[in-house]
Image (cartoon, rainbow, N blue to C red; front, side, top):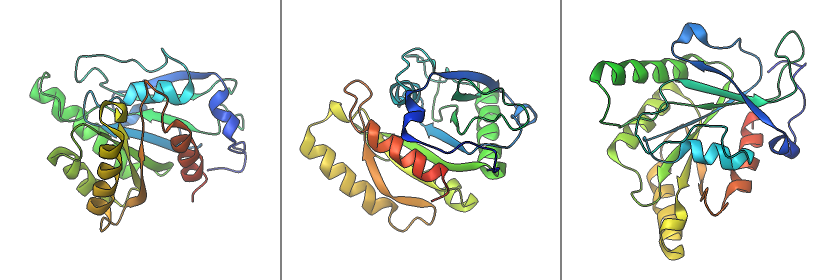
Length: 218
């Protein structure tokens, strides 16, 4: 993060945000500058819906019922910054391709997977990954595999439970506790779990605060 990057403030999420580019390969990544926060998770876990809810812009990130719709690293930044010279946005959110989908050709799956893993291991400005877990299913094997990769790459990540409104409140509390137990010994896992519902706007302020905290390097 350079000294020219504006201060991160809670009001940042109230500004209009814009999509600036889709990145199909590492060579198309924007220049490193502002801190980046990435969202990862299984296909259909609700990544795009959560991003839209966090930014209060319903159609910003594309949502689809078809697993594997997001095939690139999609970059979103607050509007009003040219991105040139010292006029950098204070933060970038990155919607990563979902993993675990089965309706795409294997070569495409392999290409997307390599892109994601190369990004995770090689992006200096990446401050934290928010790993989205469907509250109805909890941590599955593929999720655990991604945690292994993040631990190995020493990339900080925090678990966010999505679709928490689909299970009863006592089950949400139990799942949060169980999830904390599962990640407790993982070296790169942030020791807090947030339960969210994009439909009910639950847990969004917690995620916004966590993003600002992480982007500030804390």
